[in-house]
Amino acid sequence: MVAKVGRLLGYDVPAEGYRELYGEEQLQKYDLIFTNSIIDLEGVEIILDVGCGIGLLREYLRKLGFDGFYIGLDILEDRIMEAKRGEDHFSDLILADAHHLPFRDKSFDLVALITVAHLLRIEESLKELKRVSKKVLIITILKGLEFSAKLFKIVKKLMSNWIVAFLDRPWIKDAICISIRREN
Image (cartoon, rainbow, N blue to C red; front, top):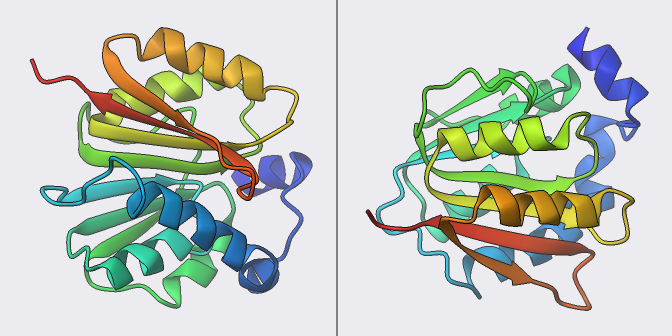
């Protein structure tokens, strides 16, 4: 059922071709987020990658030296199966969606939702991401999508007690929002 919903929403790029079509574009986003911004992976022990696709973020983080636990979550089984080809012992991959995350509150030091394209219930998904995030929440969305302004408006409202930074570079197709939980 989950896969059918994913296909109906327009996830039509085969998992095998994803790296060739979007790999370089994703790497540019990762570089901006993880090497040229306020994100520091020091002290990050567990990461949730919502909409992990074929696991490109996991590969990138491992190359950066991240040795913590990674959990990738995607709505499409073929993406998860492709990601499992490169699975390591410090990761897990789960078939689920962003509307009902199967995790406890504040379970993850860092939660990433890279290249948001399809969320049926935006506010519900963002509340779930915030709920499971202990320290950092990263959201990127393709510029010019109909709901992108709505999404960032909701982020500002939901994350009002967090430090929120928006990154927008002309050579990156996504607008990037990095939210950091304030120390209590």
